[in-house]
Length: 434
Image 1: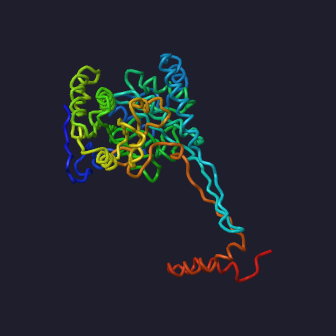
Image 2: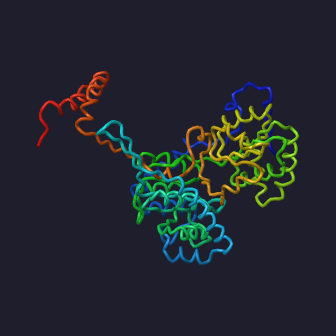
Image 3: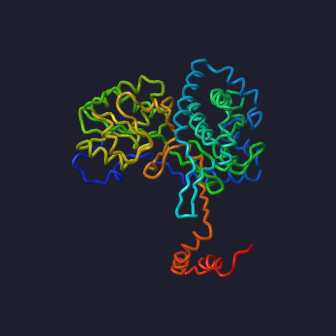
């Protein structure tokens, strides 16, 4: 069901041998390019036409009416509403502590540099709607944007034939709970193009965030520059670093939980204990057929992106972790906090037996929009900071500029840009204007 990769005694670079899902965003660009161009030219009509062509459904209107949002919230299951409410409360608590305050540095007497943090003015938030329903993605995208102070938020999610052509009611209800009134029944590349170029009631945005399939990712890449993006999201990943102290049931069920997302989902165990690997494999063999989406999970576990990886010791295991840069990393070892101190590359780290990835997906308070495909080597997950721009304000008086002017002139000549220095010298060649 799941491959084994034995790295014990190996000096191979883990990046060359570790499994990873094969997703060709570049190839998808050829598919999405005409969609984006059509939406740019024809606006709302193109969004609706492409939705009908690709999703087989045409919503009654591109924008979801207010009464549909209210009805979705009114019809929401009480337990789901309570769960979403708690997820929102915890996410707000965590993200409010991520706020950035302005700071002023007095470089010299009469010379200061102030760092201001300004929210992006308008953001488009994409919420997938394929194999599963993701109201949690509404929470994870909207909360940090609201905490950052973004003034205008719009959500897009694919239309659903079984729900009257509008997005899934649970997604709409989550929007209503968060006070998001601008919601569009649009999915795929056409939704990203709508955000980038505007269509119907949807005016262009400055940034698009949120996960999606390869076509959504390709459209984000194609439109980047006109819009900012959070990241190019790939298939989800979980890596578990475990030793003999780990419970094989915990490890197996956590691998299964992420494999449930997609046939391309990666589930990787890294361990120095062959007996644990055997026990986890045995648990998978029993549990996968018994779960609802067993066929999908089995395909993900059997794919080249998933494996049970054997290493010599936990230090070697950390080297594998840092080379892979997993989206989600669980550490199920003795003294997990100490082991976690050696982690450099991961989207989110879950410590011990009682912090499963499922908790982070919903109610830990952390954000579950995380870097995938190894981008944790250089990128972070979604946060308040994603929606803030740093603006530097420089304020020097005459004396402070005069004091440093010689250095500016010298450096301008070193770079063969003499007019830079002349712009400073000119200020001292004649009396200042009264």
